[in-house]
Amino acid sequence: NAGVMQNPRHLVRRRGQEARLRCSPMKGHSHVYWYRQLPEEGLKFMVYLQKENIIDESGMPKERFSAEFPKEGPSILRIQQVVRGDSAAYFCASSPRTSGPISYNEQFFGPGTRLTVL
Amino acid sequence: SQKIEQNSEALNIQEGKTATLTCNYTNYSPAYLQWYRQDPGRGPVFLLLIRENEKEKRKERLKVTFDTTLKQSLFHITASQPADSATYLCALAGGADTGRRALTFGSGTRLQVQP
Image (cartoon, rainbow over the protein chains, first blue to last red):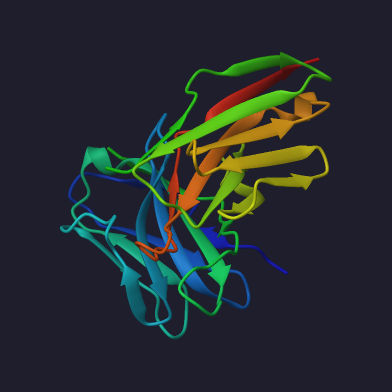
């Protein structure tokens, strides 16, 4: 039973280019979360998605960042026109579907994608 | 604004001793609290979850307490081992007032267990 998979593990982009980060949740999980971790800082929530729906994007910058979780295929976090400040580790997590407004389940994290903007 | 504080200084202890890590929060009414472990270059790994109506939770050598009056959680590792050396993250999820599933993390406390 494979865990959360993220690719690429390392991504180097020049300023102004686009970065595409992919996340395949654990089998049977329908909730995906993206977090960003800057050097020497904690994890910051960016966006929470279910299949074909963005549930909560309150942590995602309004410009240049977008996320999707299509019916088929992985979740994708897209950063357009990257800047040096986007350099960070981006983690994806997944959790299983639960009923009710509060999910008491733990989140399973992938290994992260380390983005470096030159 | 909501704030989660963990001791930013590294905690150094001798093997065999009990490590105690603290997580304090303000302006928050979490439904539950989680603790994760993160090793360098890796994603966080879930350790324990404690709900707002629970005082204490145990799992093997780990123990978590949750005091919603003090707005504090303590995380204990008994009989610590060098392999326990890592960064430990406290995470909260929204309560009835927000209904948010996404986690808010503290900045973590680095634990170093000396042999």
